Length: 101
Image (tube, rainbow, N blue to C red):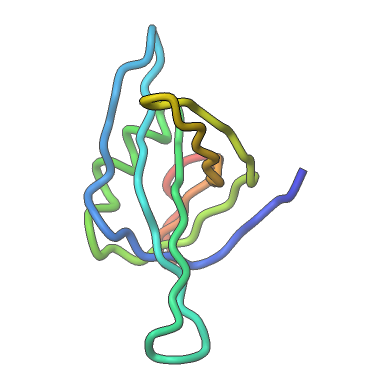
């Protein structure tokens, strides 16, 4: 398991979904690299109360810190297998303000 933490910025508003009896927020973030055009983009998922927090307080362009675990999953669409790397977020923090855990 690879644990990650860093300061990120959302590239679009998080999307809140109901999956069974749980809530999930899917969103994409960017991390700054060393150069002007050296950003890396990551898919993120938060569950439960944290999903609601992210959806409410982290709209497009918001900078905040995340902590979570990297995982890889795969799915098939139209007969083509796709692999997705994503961060399963378990903590979010605004500058100087703890939101949820």
